[in-house]
Image 1 (cartoon, rainbow, N blue to C red):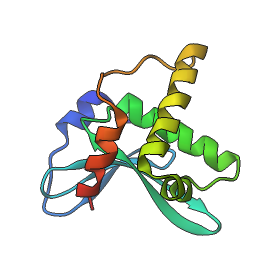
Image 2: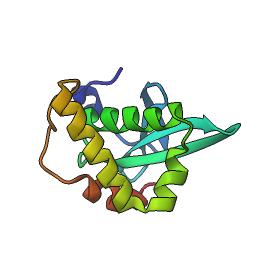
Image 3: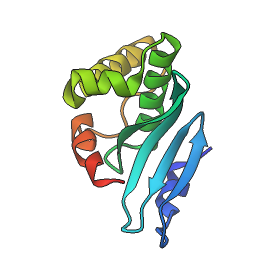
Image 4: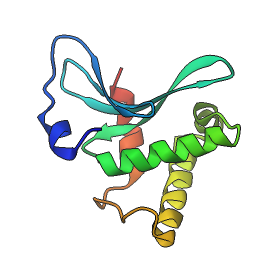
Length: 129
């Protein structure tokens, strides 16, 4: 499992590489230094990837929370990438925020580590490969 210190210490190399956290969550590190949170999963016998945002806009804790949200959707038979495409990335981000706030209210996860909105990370995620 990754820690915040390990994520900060990752340096870019000449090729894109994936640094895994577990359960399909990984950090894609590109040669230009961009760090993108991604979730790799299978749905309907196909491999798919969901972009969760850019590091440091989306911290490790928030990436894990968004990953848990996507896994919950899969457990209920919904494709997270398809849902994001159908609803639009801003509505999907709002759903993630609401789910995250409900989990904080239940005491299941801690409050957000930073005050940036998730939509900033979603908008910037298009810069990653």
